Length: 228
Image: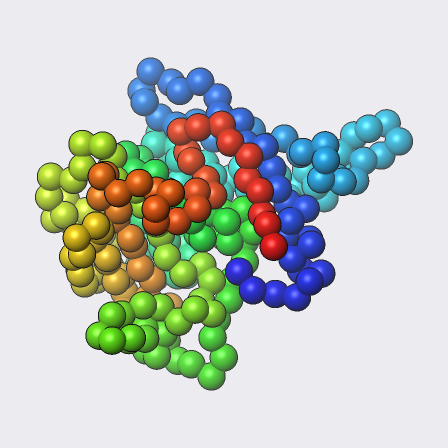
């Protein structure tokens, strides 16, 4: 995430406690209830009621959480999502990874989009220039926000990467797969007007703490803290 100091302070003030409700028998992960942290300086009236602007902010975040965690509700049209914005496509893929493949989603997408709702694009770069190469290693331009989906595969792993490719194919998304020792790196929609994004599928024996900081765990009650 990039921005000036004022923007960083405002972003830090959005730190939240995310409390999980008991899972239903269906195995669905219900939407979280967001509770303003009393230490974050949330504006309240004399009666102690949280302001409507704060309530709206939390409601928007709750909605985005539900869109990627509620397996009983499909928030996108699978026949039309290929025409949607880049971020809408990423939300659809996040729902598939969490609800169909039992992945844990964490990292920048959760911080920057689900919570922060930030969008960043590189200046003077067309979408076909978003993918860069360092020593033959491909990656997205660092100014793109949100950049990618970091998905930690479940303990039982993934029997066949084609299962995921089939699901993305149903959404009319094109995918190029690169395999490393510790992950699958998927480049999605490289040649579309909305621009590409990537999916990191981290294999189970790689500890998350060795790869990236956890920003969000859809199965645990945690607090999100943003440090600068």
